[in-house]
Length: 54
Image (cartoon, rainbow, N blue to C red; front, side, top):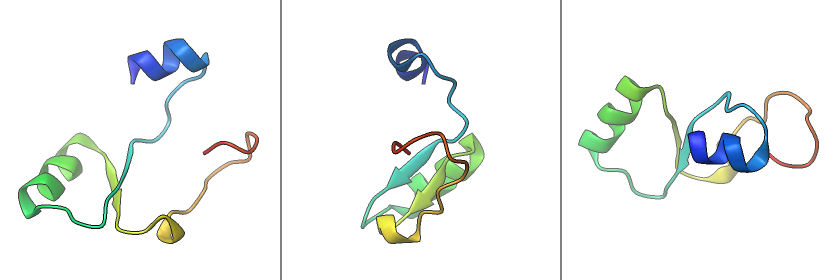
């Protein structure tokens, strides 16, 4: 996250993983770390309107 924030000059507000397969232990770790998980990008809800990039 720090790399992205420094490179893009904007604050990270969401942590997201999109993967067609996710091991149950990885899903639990993501929940603990506050990372949203999605299996297909179409299920991802874009929040806010800060341009064309999500």
